[in-house]
Amino acid sequence: MPTVPQDHIAANGAYRNGHHPQRPTSAHPSPLTDAVHAGEARYRSHNSLTVPIVQTSTYTFDDTAALIDYVEEHMFWDVPEREEYGRYGNPTVRAAEAKIAALDKAEDAVMVTSGMAAITNTLLILLSTGDHFIITEDCYRRTRAFCNTFLTRFGIECTTVRPGDYDAIEAAIQPNTKLIFSESPTNPFMRCLDYARLADIAHRHKIKTAVDTTFGTPMNVRPIEYGIDLVIHSVTKYLAGH
Image 1 (cartoon, helix red, strand yellow):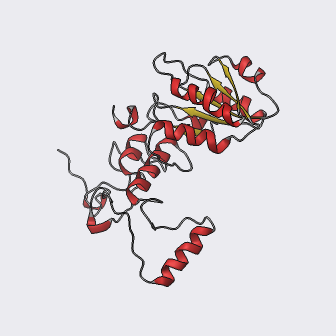
Image 2: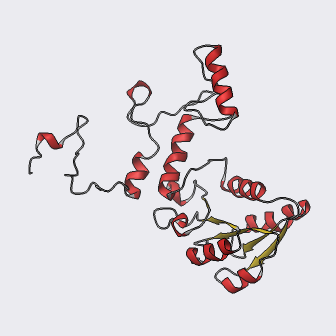
Protein backbone atom coordinates (compact mmCIF):
# COMPACT_ATOMS: atom_id res chain seq x y z
CA MET A 1 0.00 0.00 0.00
CA PRO A 2 1.56 3.36 -1.01
CA THR A 3 2.34 5.77 1.80
CA VAL A 4 1.00 9.30 1.98
CA PRO A 5 3.37 12.14 2.94
CA GLN A 6 2.67 13.48 6.42
CA ASP A 7 2.04 17.00 5.16
CA HIS A 8 -0.90 15.62 3.20
CA ILE A 9 -2.68 14.35 6.30
CA ALA A 10 -4.79 16.62 8.49
CA ALA A 11 -4.83 16.44 12.28
CA ASN A 12 -7.95 14.27 12.26
CA GLY A 13 -6.39 11.75 9.89
CA ALA A 14 -8.22 12.97 6.79
CA TYR A 15 -6.43 13.74 3.54
CA ARG A 16 -5.97 17.37 2.60
CA ASN A 17 -4.53 19.48 -0.21
CA GLY A 18 -6.59 17.50 -2.72
CA HIS A 19 -4.33 14.44 -2.70
CA HIS A 20 -7.02 11.86 -2.01
CA PRO A 21 -7.94 10.39 -5.42
CA GLN A 22 -11.63 10.01 -4.48
CA ARG A 23 -12.08 13.24 -2.56
CA PRO A 24 -13.57 16.03 -4.74
CA THR A 25 -11.28 19.04 -4.88
CA SER A 26 -13.95 21.43 -6.18
CA ALA A 27 -15.50 24.11 -4.00
CA HIS A 28 -18.77 22.31 -4.76
CA PRO A 29 -18.76 18.94 -2.97
CA SER A 30 -20.46 15.89 -4.41
CA PRO A 31 -23.93 14.82 -3.21
CA LEU A 32 -22.28 11.93 -1.36
CA THR A 33 -20.13 14.38 0.60
CA ASP A 34 -23.12 16.62 1.30
CA ALA A 35 -25.15 13.64 2.51
CA VAL A 36 -22.50 12.95 5.16
CA HIS A 37 -21.10 16.34 6.13
CA ALA A 38 -23.45 19.17 5.08
CA GLY A 39 -25.12 21.10 7.85
CA GLU A 40 -22.82 19.77 10.56
CA ALA A 41 -20.80 22.10 12.74
CA ARG A 42 -17.05 21.59 12.90
CA TYR A 43 -17.07 21.40 16.69
CA ARG A 44 -19.95 19.75 18.51
CA SER A 45 -21.10 19.37 22.09
CA HIS A 46 -19.02 16.90 24.11
CA ASN A 47 -16.75 16.36 21.07
CA SER A 48 -19.32 14.09 19.42
CA LEU A 49 -18.30 12.88 15.96
CA THR A 50 -21.89 12.77 14.70
CA VAL A 51 -24.62 15.34 15.28
CA PRO A 52 -26.07 14.75 18.78
CA ILE A 53 -29.78 13.96 19.03
CA VAL A 54 -31.07 16.87 21.10
CA GLN A 55 -34.36 16.01 22.84
CA THR A 56 -34.74 18.90 25.26
CA SER A 57 -37.65 21.34 25.08
CA THR A 58 -35.94 24.04 27.14
CA TYR A 59 -32.70 25.94 26.50
CA THR A 60 -30.80 28.11 28.97
CA PHE A 61 -29.47 31.66 28.68
CA ASP A 62 -26.56 33.11 30.63
CA ASP A 63 -28.70 35.91 32.03
CA THR A 64 -31.80 38.00 31.37
CA ALA A 65 -29.86 40.39 29.14
CA ALA A 66 -28.89 37.52 26.84
CA LEU A 67 -32.53 36.45 26.63
CA ILE A 68 -33.62 40.01 25.76
CA ASP A 69 -30.93 40.25 23.08
CA TYR A 70 -32.10 36.95 21.61
CA VAL A 71 -35.77 37.99 21.52
CA GLU A 72 -34.98 41.36 19.92
CA GLU A 73 -32.70 39.74 17.34
CA HIS A 74 -35.28 37.07 16.50
CA MET A 75 -38.09 39.63 16.33
CA PHE A 76 -36.46 41.35 13.37
CA TRP A 77 -35.92 38.07 11.46
CA ASP A 78 -32.18 37.91 11.98
CA VAL A 79 -32.12 34.21 12.83
CA PRO A 80 -29.76 33.70 15.79
CA GLU A 81 -27.24 30.89 16.07
CA ARG A 82 -28.99 29.19 18.98
CA GLU A 83 -32.38 27.93 20.13
CA GLU A 84 -34.96 29.32 22.55
CA TYR A 85 -37.59 26.59 22.91
CA GLY A 86 -37.94 23.12 21.43
CA ARG A 87 -41.19 23.95 19.68
CA TYR A 88 -39.47 26.69 17.67
CA GLY A 89 -36.18 25.03 16.83
CA ASN A 90 -33.84 22.14 17.48
CA PRO A 91 -30.15 21.89 16.54
CA THR A 92 -30.52 18.29 15.36
CA VAL A 93 -33.41 19.20 13.08
CA ARG A 94 -31.57 22.30 11.92
CA ALA A 95 -28.57 20.17 10.89
CA ALA A 96 -30.88 17.89 8.90
CA GLU A 97 -32.49 20.91 7.21
CA ALA A 98 -29.11 22.30 6.22
CA LYS A 99 -28.08 18.90 4.87
CA ILE A 100 -31.21 18.59 2.69
CA ALA A 101 -30.78 22.16 1.44
CA ALA A 102 -27.18 21.39 0.46
CA LEU A 103 -28.24 18.25 -1.39
CA ASP A 104 -30.90 20.19 -3.33
CA LYS A 105 -28.58 23.18 -3.92
CA ALA A 106 -31.26 25.26 -2.22
CA GLU A 107 -30.97 28.40 -0.14
CA ASP A 108 -32.55 26.70 2.86
CA ALA A 109 -34.97 23.99 3.95
CA VAL A 110 -37.72 23.55 6.53
CA MET A 111 -38.67 20.20 8.05
CA VAL A 112 -42.23 19.51 9.16
CA THR A 113 -44.06 16.49 10.53
CA SER A 114 -44.89 14.69 7.26
CA GLY A 115 -44.76 14.92 3.49
CA MET A 116 -48.41 15.99 3.34
CA ALA A 117 -47.70 18.65 5.97
CA ALA A 118 -44.95 19.98 3.69
CA ILE A 119 -47.34 20.07 0.72
CA THR A 120 -50.28 21.62 2.56
CA ASN A 121 -48.09 24.24 4.24
CA THR A 122 -46.58 25.18 0.87
CA LEU A 123 -50.01 25.63 -0.68
CA LEU A 124 -51.48 27.52 2.28
CA ILE A 125 -48.50 29.87 2.46
CA LEU A 126 -48.38 30.70 -1.25
CA LEU A 127 -52.12 30.88 -1.97
CA SER A 128 -54.88 33.14 -0.67
CA THR A 129 -58.60 33.59 -1.25
CA GLY A 130 -59.20 34.63 -4.85
CA ASP A 131 -56.02 33.02 -6.17
CA HIS A 132 -55.79 30.38 -8.89
CA PHE A 133 -53.16 27.68 -9.29
CA ILE A 134 -52.36 24.79 -11.62
CA ILE A 135 -51.68 21.19 -10.61
CA THR A 136 -50.76 18.24 -12.80
CA GLU A 137 -53.09 15.23 -12.71
CA ASP A 138 -50.38 12.71 -11.85
CA CYS A 139 -49.59 14.19 -8.42
CA TYR A 140 -50.07 12.15 -5.28
CA ARG A 141 -53.82 11.54 -4.94
CA ARG A 142 -54.03 13.04 -1.45
CA THR A 143 -52.42 16.19 -2.80
CA ARG A 144 -55.04 16.38 -5.55
CA ALA A 145 -57.82 15.75 -3.04
CA PHE A 146 -56.56 18.57 -0.82
CA CYS A 147 -56.38 20.93 -3.79
CA ASN A 148 -59.76 20.08 -5.28
CA THR A 149 -61.81 19.82 -2.08
CA PHE A 150 -60.20 21.61 0.86
CA LEU A 151 -58.70 24.67 -0.84
CA THR A 152 -61.86 25.38 -2.83
CA ARG A 153 -63.64 26.04 0.49
CA PHE A 154 -61.38 29.06 0.89
CA GLY A 155 -62.09 30.47 -2.55
CA ILE A 156 -58.87 29.14 -4.10
CA GLU A 157 -59.41 27.83 -7.62
CA CYS A 158 -57.46 24.88 -9.02
CA THR A 159 -57.02 23.74 -12.63
CA THR A 160 -55.75 20.21 -13.28
CA VAL A 161 -53.76 19.50 -16.46
CA ARG A 162 -51.84 16.57 -17.89
CA PRO A 163 -48.16 16.42 -16.91
CA GLY A 164 -45.89 17.09 -19.85
CA ASP A 165 -48.55 19.00 -21.81
CA TYR A 166 -46.81 22.36 -21.60
CA ASP A 167 -49.18 24.03 -24.05
CA ALA A 168 -52.09 23.06 -21.79
CA ILE A 169 -50.21 24.30 -18.74
CA GLU A 170 -49.61 27.70 -20.32
CA ALA A 171 -53.17 27.87 -21.65
CA ALA A 172 -54.49 27.28 -18.11
CA ILE A 173 -52.74 30.36 -16.74
CA GLN A 174 -55.10 33.12 -15.61
CA PRO A 175 -54.42 36.68 -14.44
CA ASN A 176 -54.73 35.50 -10.82
CA THR A 177 -52.59 32.35 -11.20
CA LYS A 178 -49.96 32.27 -8.45
CA LEU A 179 -48.48 28.78 -8.57
CA ILE A 180 -47.82 25.73 -10.73
CA PHE A 181 -47.57 22.58 -8.60
CA SER A 182 -46.38 19.27 -9.99
CA GLU A 183 -44.65 16.00 -9.14
CA SER A 184 -41.69 14.44 -10.92
CA PRO A 185 -40.85 11.63 -11.25
CA THR A 186 -44.38 10.46 -10.51
CA ASN A 187 -45.19 7.38 -8.50
CA PRO A 188 -45.95 4.81 -9.86
CA PHE A 189 -45.99 5.90 -13.52
CA MET A 190 -42.49 7.44 -13.53
CA ARG A 191 -43.53 10.40 -15.67
CA CYS A 192 -40.84 13.09 -15.66
CA LEU A 193 -41.11 16.83 -16.16
CA ASP A 194 -38.94 19.05 -18.29
CA TYR A 195 -38.07 21.25 -15.32
CA ALA A 196 -36.42 23.97 -17.37
CA ARG A 197 -39.40 24.26 -19.70
CA LEU A 198 -41.87 24.40 -16.83
CA ALA A 199 -39.79 27.02 -15.03
CA ASP A 200 -39.55 29.11 -18.20
CA ILE A 201 -43.34 29.12 -18.63
CA ALA A 202 -43.90 30.07 -15.01
CA HIS A 203 -41.27 32.77 -14.82
CA ARG A 204 -42.46 34.45 -18.02
CA HIS A 205 -45.83 34.84 -16.31
CA LYS A 206 -44.29 35.72 -12.92
CA ILE A 207 -45.66 32.54 -11.29
CA LYS A 208 -44.00 30.41 -8.62
CA THR A 209 -43.27 26.72 -9.18
CA ALA A 210 -43.24 23.89 -6.65
CA VAL A 211 -42.37 20.26 -7.38
CA ASP A 212 -42.79 17.16 -5.23
CA THR A 213 -39.70 15.14 -6.07
CA THR A 214 -40.04 12.48 -3.39
CA PHE A 215 -39.51 9.69 -5.91
CA GLY A 216 -36.49 11.35 -7.50
CA THR A 217 -34.41 12.63 -4.57
CA PRO A 218 -31.54 15.11 -5.04
CA MET A 219 -29.22 12.18 -5.69
CA ASN A 220 -30.84 11.90 -9.12
CA VAL A 221 -32.19 15.35 -9.92
CA ARG A 222 -32.12 18.83 -8.40
CA PRO A 223 -35.02 20.85 -9.87
CA ILE A 224 -33.76 24.12 -8.40
CA GLU A 225 -30.80 23.96 -10.78
CA TYR A 226 -33.32 24.11 -13.65
CA GLY A 227 -35.19 27.11 -12.28
CA ILE A 228 -37.85 25.50 -10.07
CA ASP A 229 -38.57 27.67 -7.02
CA LEU A 230 -39.53 25.12 -4.36
CA VAL A 231 -38.81 21.41 -3.93
CA ILE A 232 -40.75 19.11 -1.60
CA HIS A 233 -39.73 15.71 -0.23
CA SER A 234 -41.45 13.15 1.91
CA VAL A 235 -38.20 12.34 3.68
CA THR A 236 -39.45 9.06 5.16
CA LYS A 237 -39.51 7.61 1.63
CA TYR A 238 -36.63 7.17 -0.81
CA LEU A 239 -34.50 10.01 0.58
CA ALA A 240 -34.23 8.11 3.87
CA GLY A 241 -33.56 4.79 2.16
CA HIS A 242 -37.12 3.43 2.11
